[in-house]
Length: 245
Image (cartoon, rainbow, N blue to C red):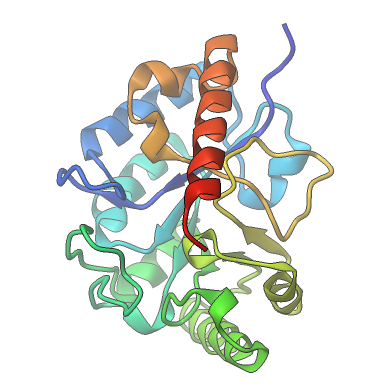
């Protein structure tokens, strides 16, 4: 049987609300426990393309419940992870202007918690300053979002920030060109495994929303899991084609 392809998993909030960005903390602990016994290597984001069967863990938005629920579990298993932080909303809530309806009001990590996570081995990545849809901005506005956010993060944690996640997965060749001037890695929301020769500024990720069920989570890299992922990819493609432009 062929070895599983490397994957990047995307988490957002660890809470019990049941929203599309939420995962129960108990489910997260169960997933990490299974990963620790699975034999799959959990690696930093910048090593995922070169690690056969590897898994990279990413967390978007920097919710405070990452610090409360995920950080201790990651330390328990010595798992690396990257948290993509929205710099101007640190210590606040997820009430940015482009927030989707139906998402619960949630606290974001305070700067002191971001700093402590970084000292504890968590990689901090950039998720812009205000979480806009980047394709709707001018090049100068994109530059401003990236520059302000990266400078704030690096000043706070005292480390280089070289990874970026596109808010809502919204990007284009123009956006990627700007991002490439500031960051080495760019993470999208494209639902696919990682290719060893893929674009470093368009790294695909698997949103954990589709793998909350432990059966499908454990199936990642197995035959039935590959079939499930292919079905999800097809459904997403249909929805995107039917979405009004």
